[in-house]
Image (cartoon, rainbow, N blue to C red; front, side):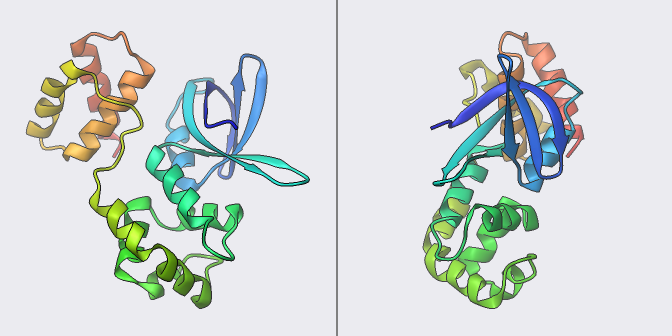
Length: 199
């Protein structure tokens, strides 16, 4: 099973990206939040995606996510009766992960039915089967997708003191560490501030 891809972004549409890994192009289905993140990258940039490999008798499909939390939520969604990968991707495209988790935890069926493709019965099943787990995930700190280096704590404090939310600062630092692991502290700070400015 493929669980992670890192390579050059060859092409991108709102629902599909092609990532070149050592000369092999992998077509990866994407939810909109991941598409928006990839859209920020320069042409031909190296990108890193968390992958869910979906295997059927007649096909093997890859679904890509910018964060581990997105992938974890996708994998929870497809455990619900009547929710396949396409609908799970549509659900993640219809609401940001944090908003979706809040809606599930609160049993907000009305909000869920505003997602294209989600009827009342599906929304009720989502709440019934995921409400408890969604409450746990919503309460947990969002994974950043990569662990912060020990010496990044000072950078994190500096960003928080500048007025950025800790969760946003952690994600920005993790992302720049993933892209430029050997960068010096001033360069990391500059890159993190550039990312945070896009929010």
